[in-house]
Length: 502
Image (cartoon, rainbow, N blue to C red; front, side, top):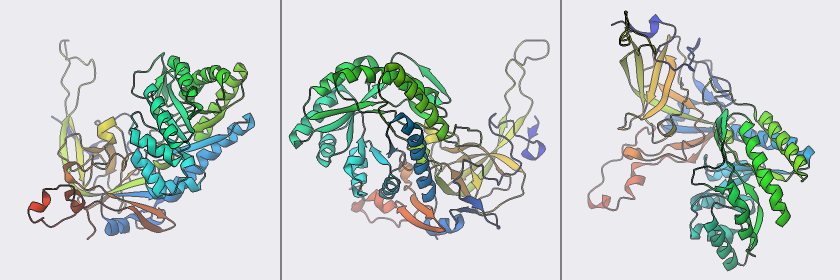
């Protein structure tokens, strides 16, 4: 069997079709890395002017680094994009940052200072918003199974809107508002029947999912809301998916919702329409999402035309981006622990048959996939394991002239599915001790982090103008053992913190 080593070919046949063999395995793809990511003269990566080697030494690895100005600039950009195109229609716009993407008190303050509202989806996220000093009137409160205690707390604080996810919640929120002596503004989450992901969407009559209520049941639900003196109906809410690369799905959902919106106006005010989030970003150089300005313009055109056809004014429009604002701002640093070359048999091309017919021919040959193990994994970024998500990676502490090699970056957990980057070309001399950087980890990596295998969760550090500061400190083994009430029965061992600075 012939073994195809990387040096013998220009592209490894094990690489997915979308992954191009790079001319330079050190290059940072535009749109994938923060705008202020660059390599210094010595080849080391710098984020907002801060050398990543210094960050790793001081804060340890794995380490999530957030470019503060990237978050702020993207918050302003999406705010201005929607305001610009809806203003000529006479419609106000409101942007809620979806805190589920990544929430801590400082990020809540950043987006607030850029004129954004904040969306929370649990009592815990509500507590973070309050700890950050966010005006409760600027909060939207989501969740398909909000507890009575969470609802009461939201009403007590005076949150700007509670999103009702079921008929059951109508009574619960009304009861809490009556007890608090308040009139609580609410939205109703409706399933438009539009499913969208990346650049494709599917429109159906109904959606089979846990969120919201069916479009054809919404008028009856709104009647129940309006029958409660302690509730004020603001309008409809919709969310059609994630990682959406264009405006087609949003436009179809808007058409459907506006038809219902127009009918609801006959029974009372419907001042706004919330079209949700899901705007896509580039995780790899192969991703090509439309600019947010283009999506905003397409959506404004559909909303304007549909309202004109229905003979109604354009309502105030709200959106709820999370990933789009914070995703690209995040880079995770890892230390390489081991590398391993694995010989993988090549599959025969589909339909290829042996000479003379009969069974398909067996592949003649194999190729090498290099496994690069790092000191984190699915505990700090579960998206590859959970969704099959693709990421990029670069050696961060140096540049290299070595021939690119196909690698799979994997974590330290006892799971074969513990993959950080499924396929990437790195310099062929990548070795233990190298520092690896994985971009676009600002959204859903920290939020979904766990302590699987008792790996403490990483620190989160913000960088800006050549300086760094800790947003969330690194978790320690002592933190984990503090919850184990049997740990005090014996003398605790020393705490060798994985990845801690020397």
